[in-house]
Length: 232
Image 1 (cartoon, rainbow, N blue to C red):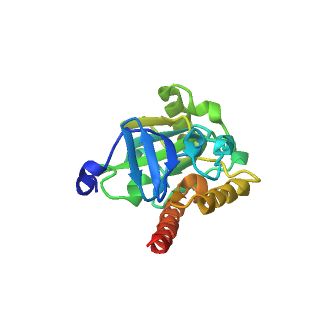
Image 2 (spheres, rainbow, N blue to C red; image 1 turned 120 degrees about the vertical axis):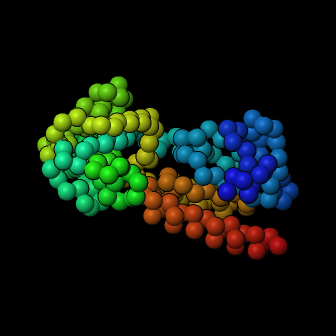
C-alpha cells in the first residue's frame, strides 16, 4: 500500500491544525501545509483533543481529553509443547476480576495463526494492566512477565521457563467506554455534520475490537462517499 501511495504518504509528520477553506481543508503539519477536499482523522482521542481546528462554525475538541486510556502490557511467551498441560486449542481466555488473577486474559496465538511458533512449541500472548490494574502494566518488563508466568502456571499448567519472551508496554492502550460515553459519539457526529469534509474513525468511536475497527472503516468510507457525491 505504501508503495502504491508513493510520495503522497507522509510518515512521522504530526498534524497540528486544520483550517476550513472555501471547498476543503488546509492541513498544517510538521512538514508544512497542504490542501485537500476531505480529511479523515483515524488517530486517538487524546491526540484529537490537542488538534486545532479553524472553521466558520467553532469546533471544540477539548472534551475528548476526558476519554480514559489506561496502560496495558502485552506479554508474548513461547513454551515447549510438553511444558504446557492445557491443550490451548481454542481462541484463548478472558479472566474476570473476581477470579483473583493479575492477567486480563491470554490469546492462544499459535492455535489461531500459522507460523506463530516452531514445531513442538506454542505461543501465548497475555495482557496485564488496563483499568483493573493499571499500575502493573508500568512495572519493569521482567516483573510483568513474571506476574503473567505465575498466573499461567496455575491456569494452564505451565511448568519450566519460557523459551521466548517479548514484552511491549502501551502507556495509553484502550479507550474506556464508561457510562455516559454516548456524549462523545454524539459530539463526533455533530462535528461532522457542521464541518463538511471532516470525518472521524477509530476505536474511540465505534468500539475497540478488530471487528469494530472493520465496521468503523466501512462506515466512514460510506459517509465520505456520500459527501463526495453531494459535492460533485
